[in-house]
Length: 240
Image 1 (cartoon, rainbow, N blue to C red):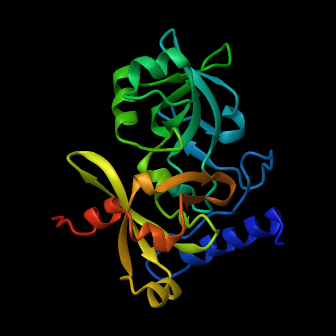
Image 2 (tube, helix red, strand yellow):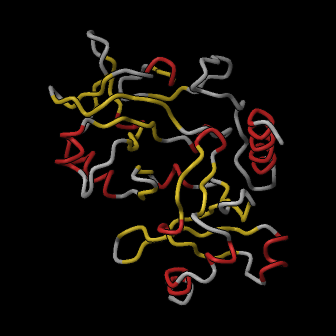
């Protein structure tokens, strides 16, 4: 059986290779930002021109004015830092109840909303709770967790037996709500199942994510996904 460490290395190699293809964005150094490895640690510019990396923000409480929103617990694992636009935040229960359509314990926190680290060590956001609420409404829900669109792009899609189906290239909305993803399928999948290079998979077909491997997992075998009424419906719709 392949160890989890070897699987992670293989997955990161696949992502690195993808970004060295023509017309791709060149990746930065791959590193596991949640293990304390500071080599090549991601940084981003803030509104006040200071720079913070994820290690400096982990486990810090986040506030909008005097209201505690939650605690920063990590960020997406991806070799291209331009794709990592959000952090993961464990949301306070009362905040989730008030500002989410359906409460979720974990949600994205856009990096652009981070203003500064206050004197007491907490993180100050630059926008109001209404803006954060608007961002959370523009997410997808998988396994009762919220994910921003940028956290879904380029994720590998696996069926529940661990077979890779393809990679997410786009999300699409129906009536202003994200209902599915567009997946670029692997050549072997196209030949075996007779599917096109690009196909739509409904969000409801996913059961969970695998964060360390940057993957999202279907709830059943791929052949059964193809038989889902929701799959058949969204692949029969015409989008502009």
